[in-house]
Image 1: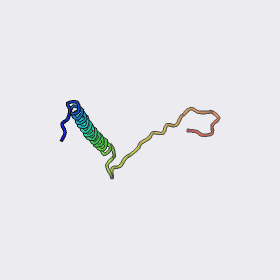
Image 2 (image 1 turned 90 degrees about the vertical axis):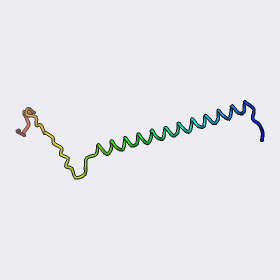
Image 3 (image 1 turned 180 degrees about the vertical axis):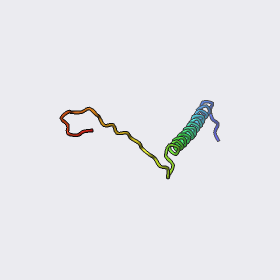
Image 4 (image 1 turned 30 degrees about the horizontal axis):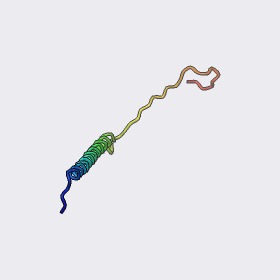
Length: 75
């Protein structure tokens, strides 16, 4: 078993810390992504109409009363 020099020890600690920070960053990113997908799914389910519910569309048709005097169609 060999002894590590102070420089080698410091480098190992740096690498270990960097790897640990990377792992935590990935964990946080995954948690945020799952949370955002959950919110998106909840909004999509909330926005869709319930099955069996009737949806009615009502439009008003307006007919212009003044038109071309040579027209043969009378309102």
